[in-house]
Image (tube, helix red, strand yellow):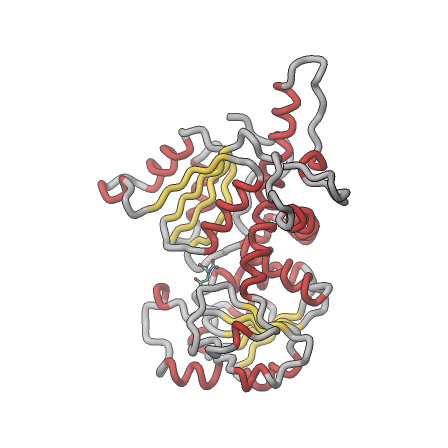
Length: 343
Ligand code: NCD
């Protein structure tokens, strides 16, 4: 199976992208968001490519989002779920992932409860690897779709004051988001009780507060995190009710936000805990926009990793005389004329 000859092969963490890589994906995201508004939201960019999702941990939106993105790029998809697989017969992670890769896939999208699995797979497999969440380590595509959502609601990420609230210690979303926001020059404040802050929080180079009410009036973005109990190994909170009273974004607290401020959440939400039951339906909340933007951003990520190789391969296999170098614009018109839609 041929791979892209130039450019990045994997997306394991936000640091793999840097500021320019993040900006490039946000720009590509605009083109794919346009594709997603078409009557037939599909382009042939990854025709002939195969994307496998390897989810060893539960997921609703991330998995469906990657699969939708791959299909809209005309890639074939292969799906693996830990339940119902040979893992229950004692097969190792390495053997399972190499079996899936041997089907001839170009890209593996992996989620696993252990930090470092995506990076390990990138060493074992001869295909691209995208980290869709590894333990409490990173979740880079979530950070990208969140930055895209901030940019589409507020115009730009730079200089925006973002409060990240809740269980930061166990959150891969927070780690990737803070890295992406810092790369784009936003101002980040972590808001949490001391027990839910990461041990090395000083090295994150962000402001820290335990008083949500002090932070709200200045925030442009309030980003709420679920209590990730599956990753907590001790009782870190007196009670859910007390957590909600101190750190939950109730409708009364929303009233203290600036008019332009937005409320974000990666999902899944626990209504009545980190977010007031009625807040997700308020205009300031971007939760369903985040999900919709996630498809465009994952199309951008897949296209960036696999697209140029696909184009080169298509050009090489075209009959002589018809051979030409395929361009991203073949699939993603930058400024598509009405009526000139491709599918
Ligand atoms: C997050 C995850 O799985 O890391 N959800 C997501 O991908 N949208 C956050 C969470 O589980 O709380």
